[in-house]
Amino acid sequence: MVEQVNALGRRAEETHDRLERGIMQQVLRLDDFFGKANNPKDLHTAYLLRWRNSLRWQEGSGFDVGSTLRANLELSRINDRLQLAISGAGKPDQVTPSLPEDPGNPGFDRTLRNTRIVNTELRYQLMRLPHSDLFLGTGFDLAIPPEFFARGRYQRLDRIGQDYLLHFAETIFVKNPDGFGETTEIAAERSLDPKTLARIALSGTVSQEIKALEWGTELSLLRELSARSAVTLVGGVYGNTSIDDWVTNYRIAATYRRNFLRRWLFYELEPQVTWPRKEDGRFTTTFALTLRLEVVFQGNERKLVPPP
Figure 1 (cartoon, helix red, strand yellow):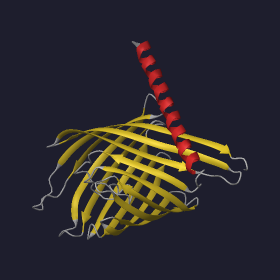
Figure 2 (tube, rainbow, N blue to C red):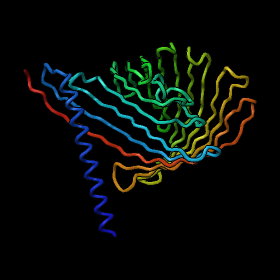
Figure 3 (cartoon, rainbow, N blue to C red):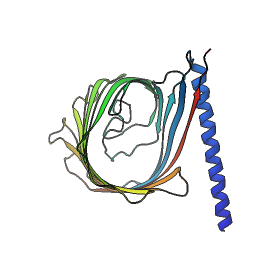
Figure 4 (cartoon, rainbow, N blue to C red):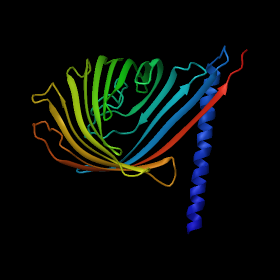
């Protein structure tokens, strides 16, 4: 039995490595095909791909499955400031609010997702400093008909003393056919000890699509349990200024994340309680439990391009 398990593990490792090499070859082929280096320089082509699968149980809705894929490609032979981002997700969690993951990127820029997400974006890094960066991006959402978007995002991280970090981000975006919008994000972090971090984060979005201010705030406690595991506790309040008391949902959740069996394999267990606002103004209690499995693929290659 032990030998069979070990053999299965070796086959999984070999398959993962083969897929990593195959993806890297495709990224290099894309970079080489479109790129042209006129001067000798050290070029860095890299990618990071995360594939997450989830099984979710929610009170009143039963079980549901979902899958998400996020990939980032650095294409230095085309331009050392260029990145290609690809996002895909199945059916969203309708009653699970959270702060926007990626403001201005359709499907990831709202506190509540309500659409299936498949989009791609080309980003150009205008500024990349140790504590701040600025990029411009444009892409399209694979809907029928296709929806196009463009955005500019600036973010900055400042350290105050030994224990505090302040994060600020501003995103201005335009989406077809929804129009213009803007998202402001502010967060503060405090190190309680070498393995514990407390964070408070606020986000607000105004746009022609929302026609109001959609906002959210979360208080989180992050604790590293070991080199392979960590737990996060989060409490959040979310709302929209278009309703009377501005609050649309409350959430309390705990997430346990662990790296297991292989360096590229992770699982998460997330119980949560939400209080979504109903049409009659009442807040009802809803329990949910989500199990996620994440597979990570990554690769990078540096090479010196000789002069022509």
